[in-house]
Image 1 (cartoon, protein in one colour):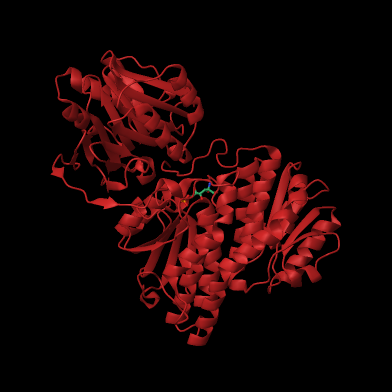
Image 2 (spheres, rainbow, N blue to C red):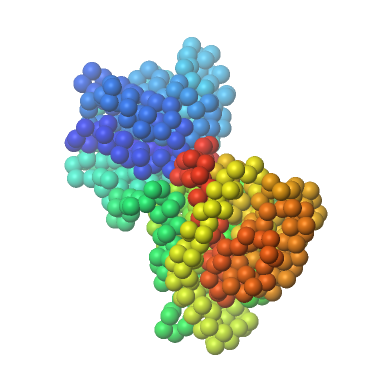
Length: 606
Ligand code: M6R
């Protein structure tokens, strides 16, 4: 969480900081700030709220200068108000931070005892004071910076400016990512390649513990031991054009419509359409492993939950799935021969990364299904299995989810064939089915987008909404509920349809919409019984099904009809009406669907 940009440039810094912060706003948008070396000295502007508020402050009180630092905040320590906005200031130092300094309370007590006074409630200000203290004691800027880093426990990416050092930006990373951008006679630091994307596509990723001093033409990078090191400079594809919303009103709408392409591009790494075969991008051999442990958070967890049904049913491969935040702290008894697979859009989610590292430390083979190719997870795992959804900007995950499902279903087919659970003819049939998914994704958007509008309008007036599904559709019920909560702030819960009578049925009345996701698969009849139970209690059923399911739907249910498809890709196709519904309910409520309150796109703190 939190986004950082630092610039030693040749043109005015403040507008460039703003441009970059707009691309980083997905990391948090509680407050924002900019600091610049002006002709009159180091100065800053800050604003509570979004980047546009900071822009307004800068318009009223501009900052002149070509070297600057910017930050967009997702609050951890201290309320999301102006005095806690970054850059934080102490003496000669202005500092921005992404992460959590765990020992900040002890350090703060020590600094107060030494006579220092604090303006904010942040952990960040402590670090600014430590650096300033080092400067006061006569250390050079880089030495004072390193001395401060040595005192910190916790996670951080940092950027610092120092009064009087007008051609210098300092940066450091431990636990939170930071890149160095190499421009033409100018240099940058940023939270990721997108941050520096408007200025350069040549970046170096700092390793854990690295710190850096950038000047106009060079970067001095040091490792945690203070040894000068080189980090590979790569050309990345995080072009500015990829993150525009084009003619769509919101990134969420665009990204829902991006899904046929996201699926198609992802399939290109996982299936051979000519040979009719599925494979991991690195041809991983699934006969080498005894079981799979899937690890993820949020929407990615629901993709993993759906995949468990398929890995066990189709590939006969024992599969566990757990939210990473639980797994990492419960000392799990993982069987030898387990392949640990993280699923993550960003590749930076702190809990998922920690769970993955735990598995690695236990000697397990690790893999990650990741959308951000240059992320920390991508670089740390034994097997990188990318999704190709392209940058996902909306905080609500949509195309990354269906791209994850695309990759996971392809891996299921590959594992099933390698482990002798299906023959070549069945593999070919399943591959053909996967190859139809992009077309069916286009069709489901076309078939359901308008039909959902009146239902969305009614749901926008509900206080609570239930989502029910069975088998792989259980994971979709959970995902549908999460999308509605995030997009509209309406309370929603997903349940396994069979669980309803064990409690949730008490919530059913005429004012509670119940969204039931039920293609005409083997579980349909059972789910139909659950529908009848809801209808008998005056519940308002919205059934999302296919043509065959429509023929057997209770007359009282409102129906949304998705294209008929093979059960193996049904989770992919049926995800779309749930996303569209959440989007349209959000619109009807006037919610900020791309940046809902309290959330951030990339959750890099635990
Ligand atoms: O980047 P990741 O896929 O690891 O992120 C996991 C969750 O934070 C993410 O899916 C979150 O739940 C989204 N806001 C869901 O829309």
